[in-house]
Image (cartoon, rainbow, N blue to C red):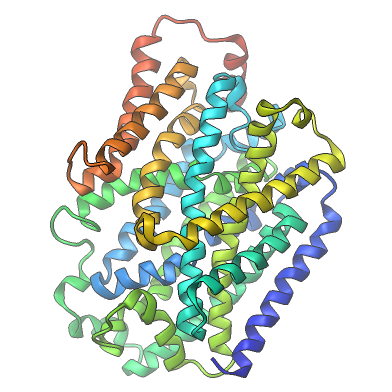
Length: 494
């Protein structure tokens, strides 16, 4: 990188920090910090939901996938997410703002105490926090690898720099700062992505290269799915869809807060549909330079680490290279800070009050103080996971293996608990489904049970779902539903 590139990166960081401190005046209590007072515009929520699906992982791990396997990435990732969010906008997404209006929740797991019981809420909250340690740690690791590719800085230095910058503005401005920095980086991402897209097309000979490039690539790179039943195949993509459906409908907690924070269910539907449209369109532009990578930069030994930095340095002038790096920084920081904000809500509202009475009934400045302290503590732990990423299978292992496998068992009782059809599933159903799913994950990863890797991806989620349904429709078939749960289901279905 050249001087102008560093100026662009530093300038963008200054803007992000400025947004954080500007948002400070809008944060008076924990409700403002965690859910923006329930007044977030639907279009801002939709853009933030979309942006929160990107991170340095897309430009590192997924860049390597695009280089090796080609077009299939668009279908198992972009199209899968778009379809999942469209379906989620019908089933789950409109229920999140209804929960806030009915119960005054500030975290996605706060309603579980009423819906199931205190133990279920605590188990789901703790399990979910552990899942996000892996997920956010993967994103910091990806950012460190990107900085190494662009600047030559050691990976650990990039991890520390990116995490500390994000920590400052999220601890100061909360969700409001996070949403507005999402919007700022969305604009930067569009500009940087379009410039790189156009530059790639010009290098390849013009607009016809969008179609002609596939003739210069291996035949399998132009297929919708990878052949066989392994990773990125049609079967794998279908199974991965169910993980995506739960994740983007609110099973990934920071995405749930995007819907909790809007005015009502109509706004939540609009936000979800806007995000879905963006997922159908933008990845085609974003991934094209990566798909053309084998033609432009053949023979890369480590495309995950080399491809995207190499493309930007090859095609973009001084200043714009820094803009691209700033864009990727912003993507990652967006996801990580929104995760930290949401996990802080879960810790402050759901876990700590069950550990000590001094955390109960926090209001005003005191609630805000603990919100910021828990944000800092969680971020510090994710940094440790990022620094020791190799233990868990590096970046792609953290995301596709640990996060995807562990998400299902925690998301099943969280999301299905919103549905009246499952109202007879009680606390035992919630806890049993989580334990069953996590047990499957443990057995397969310890080598006690051997199953096909593709099935391994979905097995914990499937087992959790089956156990939950058994309780809802068989074991508890004749059991009376608690009046408060009946009332909650009625308010969510109106």
